[in-house]
Amino acid sequence: MQNGISGLESPSTGGSDSYRNWGGRTVFITGASRGIGKAIGLRLAKEGANIVVAAKSVEENPKLGGTIFSAAQEIEQAGGKALAVQCDIRFEDQIKNAVDKAVETFGGIDILINNASAITLTPAEQTTPKQFDLMHDINGRGTFFVSQACIPYLKKSVNPHILTLSPPLNLEIKWFGNHVAYTMAKYNMTMIVLGLAEELKKYKIASNALWPKTTIATAAVKNLLGGDALIKMSRHPEIIADAAYYILSKPSTECTGNTFIDEEVLALEDITDLNKYAVVPGGKLYADLFL
Image 1 (cartoon, rainbow, N blue to C red):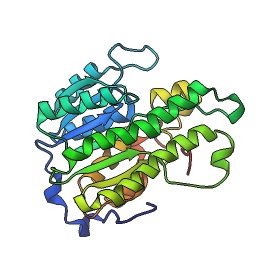
Image 2: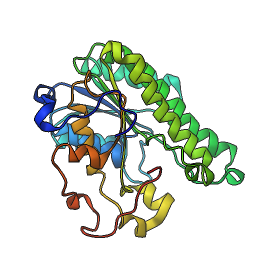
Image 3: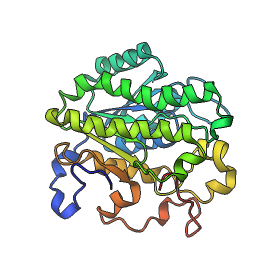
């Protein structure tokens, strides 16, 4: 963990069992129709949480798979209640509509997962204005305004958390040289995390970032980064979902302002055998960006 205002304690000292009762808690997840967002939704649904699936996909893309409706169905089969709501977080009216529907359906919002993100790993000369704007509109701007819309309801929660899928702020120049537009967009998300942690601590709202140690087997990794070869060197999204569960189960007053790495979170829960998460157990793993 880095940049911590306060950390994630080990199970023997955390004293947070009372916060692991998920019944009736409502989790708003952006980009939850597939991949990491859906995996987190399924994990928390098993604990009895209400899951708001806020994403763009209402018709299945054969390359990506999944819609808000199929994800909601899986979440309900896992034991939670689900609300599927179409939402493109580039547009404030759609954000407001999704948040309003979540509150109308479940009575409030206890946790926000900022998962939606766009990626284009192009050098400066090859990055188009459309690509640049898409990454910044979703990653930075979208994360900011979804968080803003949820804050009034998080203030009313007993144990409110914001968890954002973004990396630690690693200023080594190599992370800027190959894809500066994407690096800027992802680091914007993390700066929002840290800013909100400081701004919202008076309201007892936690704000943390979470990032994987290795690449994660998602459609984006397969289609945009490395195909089947990279998938075989990746871990399943469930490792992020389990790490998210442990972070979100901590008291919001004691765990905020961190940029967590999934492996470190699980280690503090005495989970060190991570072979079950590997696409190819025992195989070579590929380190994710920014680490």
